Length: 241
Image (cartoon, rainbow, N blue to C red; front, side, top):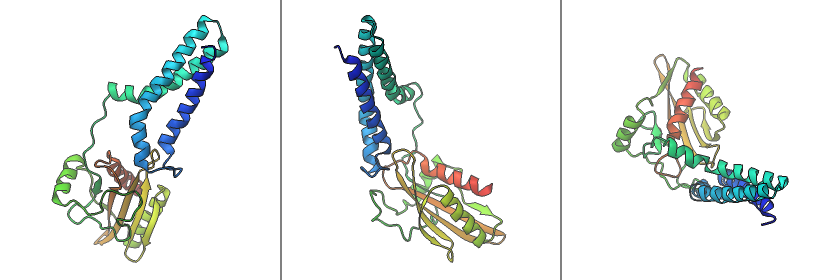
C-alpha cells in the first residue's frame, strides 16, 4: 500500500485516455462509431467506480500517514473517477426524454428527397436509405411536427449556392453537388462518437422564389436521438439569417 497514490494516479491517467478513445476513437479511425458508443455505455461507469475507489483509498491512507504528495495523487484520481460517474448521476437525477425510435427525418414525407449518389455501400451503414413510407411519416409528424420545407424569395440558383455554402460551413462532407439540378448529397458527423448521418438537400423553383427540402438518415441505430431533426432546424435557421 506504500505506492497506492502512484497506482491511483496511473489508473486515473489510463482511464482518462480510455474515455477519450471511447469518445473520439472513431474519428481517429480506430473503429466504427457504434463500437465507441458501446464501450462508453458498458465500461464508463465501472471504470469510474474503480478509479474513484482507488483514489479515495489512496487519499485516506496517505492522509493518515501524513504523506502530502500521495494524498494529492489520490485526490486527483478521485476527481477523475467522479467525473467518469457524472453522466450516470445526471441521467439518474434528470432522466433524458426518450427520443422517437426513428432515424430518417425529411421535410417532405410525401415525396421525400431521394439519394442518388450515396447508396448501401456507405461505410458502416446498417440502415437503409429507403424511406419508411406512411408509417414513418406518421411517426415523424407525432415526434417532430415542426419539421417542414423551407421557402425563400431567392431564385433557385442563389438558393442552391447558399445551401451549398451552409453545408460546407456546417462541416458536412460534400459527396455530390449538382448545380444544374440544384441537389446536394453529403455526410454529416457528430462531434462525439463520430456517428455519420447522410443528408440530401433539394432546391425546387416556386412562383415567388424557391423551396428547399432536406432529409437526414442515420447510418446506424433505430433512433437518431433527435439529431437529424436538430440539424434540419439548425440549417433552416442559418439559411434565414
